[in-house]
Length: 304
Ligand SMILES: Nc1nc2c(ncn2[C@@H]2O[C@H](COP(=O)(O)OP(=O)(O)O)[C@@H](O)[C@H]2O)c(=O)[nH]1
Ligand SMILES: [Mg+2]
Image 1 (cartoon, rainbow, N blue to C red):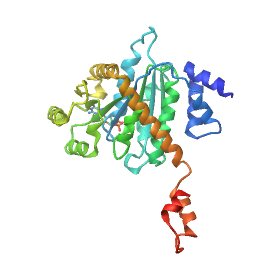
Image 2: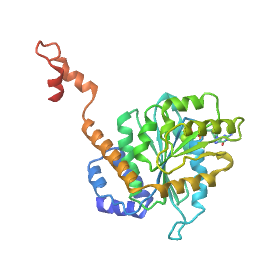
Image 3: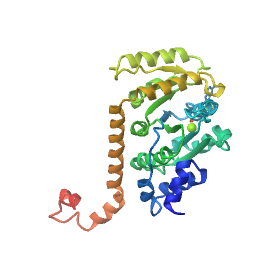
Image 4: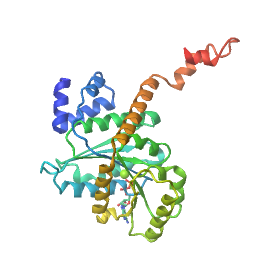
């Protein structure tokens, strides 16, 4: 297939073209860069990152949001469409979450208004955000009204979501230890909206109050007052309020904020591009014959 044809399909939201374009990008097929260079971003599609610990209910929440969003129409009076990227860090910690995500969002797999794609990260840390960014941009060049990215907020990935998403929704559950874990992981710094999911559990109010208190102790970022919402994603409770908050946050995005995001994205892509052919194993091979020499100098080696 010609790239121009593929790009045209992506633009129109054609499923097969989208799937194909994403595979090209994901597997770095020949010409995938030409594909990326041909993307056009005529719409300003909001990209919403849903992050939080495994099992917090992120997929269930996205499922509920999809249902609500698809029941509404967009500015042109057409039924809304949604693109979803679910990222599965293939670590033992979250093993099997891909399958879980598929199950949770299964009802939407045949819905023509919804396009869902899972990305396995194959343990590549730095590469995750670059690849996700590229795949997300394929969706942004299409005609979706909303794009969701599900990421597990543990370790480094929660920081990586910042440059990716326009709005970051941090999802937590009222569980002893979760709050402390959240505070430690740096996840509190990145949320534009906080969701206490599984509000049907005991302690949800207290947990939410704790988060509000913690947020108040932080210096405010601009005008936006970070909402702390309670949801029961499996029962579709609190979903309308969440969508309203997401839309309200999208509207607050200033040109300056968008500029910062773009700079963050550019930085990631450059970093990823530069590191592409560098790995420890090759370095070890190259070092093998020289590192014990008397005149060996690590800095000259690195420069070379
Ligand atoms: N009781 C209760 N269970 C929920 C709620 N939301 C999700 N769950 C359940 O929590 C489990 C993990 O949900 P999932 O969406 O896969 O979490 P993820 O790993 O964050 O994507 C599933 O069994 C869901 O059915 C909720 O609001 N209340
Ligand atoms: Mg999930």
